[in-house]
Amino acid sequence: MIKELLKQAYLDVKLSRHLRIGQAMFNRLYDVDPEFADSLRGSDVDPFYADDYEDERVQGFLKAIEERK
Image 1 (cartoon, rainbow, N blue to C red):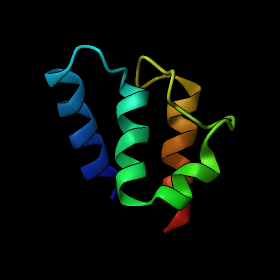
Image 2: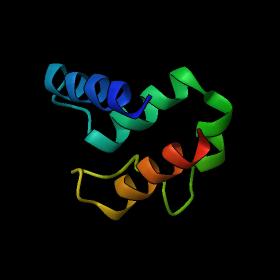
Image 3: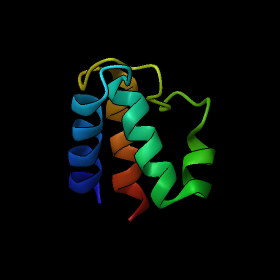
Image 4: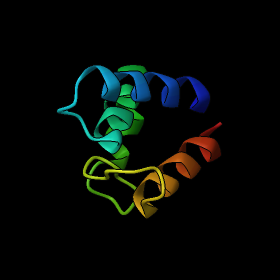
């Protein structure tokens, strides 16, 4: 799920320069699992305002998804 989410988020950002990578990642997770996305909203791992993959929020977000499996 993570690879597909990252691929789609990357494409979203490339197609729309108005999206941050964290915003695109969160939106894609919301499309797939809105309940889980809502549980992360506003937390330390909410990547919505992150601009790059190295941001702690993005890394925590990816870890949270991986641990959900």
